[in-house]
Length: 371
Image (tube, rainbow, N blue to C red):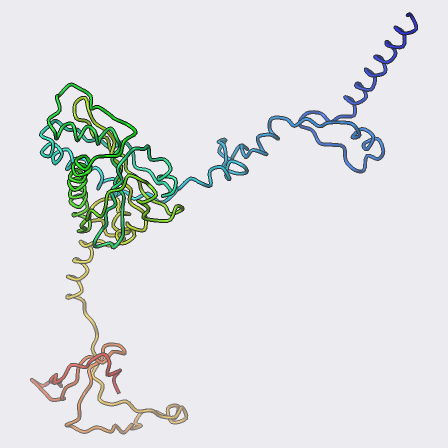
């Protein structure tokens, strides 16, 4: 028995000695591993040793490294995860359009339902069309509409809560009672017709909201309950999604307007403006001032009787008293030029002791320069 205990104790001491040797040969946390030039000692220390990564190394692998500004950068695995997100340019005027839509809808829906209606906008985001179709909570009604002047399509989604609320209000439901929702059944013809009337009111207001920027007519195409039948673009295409909230006292629901970027492309330059009527790089006041001052600008006008080409030898031989013969006479036309541009043609004469030219013809630009 004593021999067994001593043998067990010796094995434990041997195991503890091996662990101590491993701890001595392993690199310190955050330090460098043994170099290849350390010889056999480095190789023997690496055998049977498991290197434990510190937190900085784990963050580096996951793409959570610290940036120059001290924040988290967007690289590594995080960049792969975020690659599905849509990050497109901001369209400032589009926010103005939807704000105008909210105000117009508040008035038109009050007239439509004869009830106190409040419309508010939750958010405006960019999303891929395929992701949006997969995120629509069913049951819902999806209205496909066409922008006539832009020759492209958009999508208007009415959720189940708003459908039942509109039906309840239009058919004389009591105030103070929540709309009854019956799930698991298709929408009836009456419900579809009432929602179609609601969609027509919203599309009319949406057209009015775009009128100050660009006149456009949104025409209702069809009403679908299956998102697959409401496809108006490729799944990877980007779109602008505006989520609106419609409240009718204790009832209401959500309404979403989706406009693909391809639909907004004809008016993209207008939507990029910071305010209505902005002109990129132009100042109408400065243009008017410049045009007015140009009328008072003095420009030299030269009268050219004729032009003669001479060899360089003859030009160098010219001296005081030399004569250059011109192929003109007293009745020949004289060209008035401004720089290299021929302006007018006329006859030379005399008036009041001064040599004058009576303009007889205006030179066109395509006739070239003076002879």
